[in-house]
Image (cartoon, rainbow, N blue to C red; front, side, top):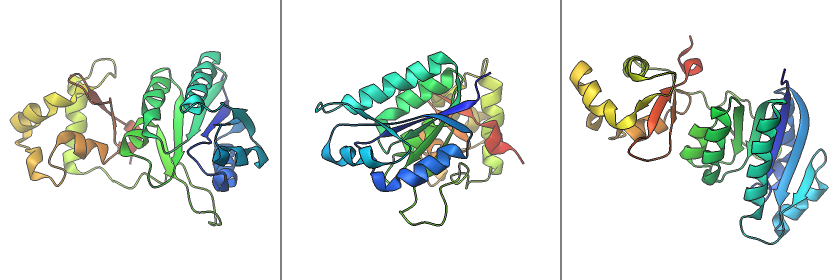
Length: 226
């Protein structure tokens, strides 16, 4: 049974000053058997001095590190030896990778700076913001769980469950007419003004597909747990 943890760091995007915090975060999840940093630029090269990591040089190409990280992540998933994968980056393009890994049954823990986009945060099983160097302790996997479900969220969850097949979720475009018809809810009366904005703002409660006419939303059971 898969029981170990894999850690992949976007060295061109994340500063090595976070190396200790990233390593501590991954180790608290379980046995860390793979820890790699991908990079090619001058900033990333400083990762070669970070203890506990294997540095993978991606060459001078613009997206070399991103491509190698993605390849190794998919390979790690195919090996079926890891229960979870930690991706350290603030690059929103990795949201596609996170969604694919989760579809394959892997838990994906995201780590990034405050600038990390909501799209990547929502794509991960859980996301934690890296603290400044010298903070008292590493980020905890549950630090982003700050929104408690409201009465509206409970209604949304019930609606998703009603229209979801085999856990695939329901189309986001269907939420507006169905929530208005059944509950008289108009999303325009909320601060976020749109359903996508409302759902994205609550990554601990909902998981969304990338934008598109068939994009779906799923609720996260842990977010609604008492």
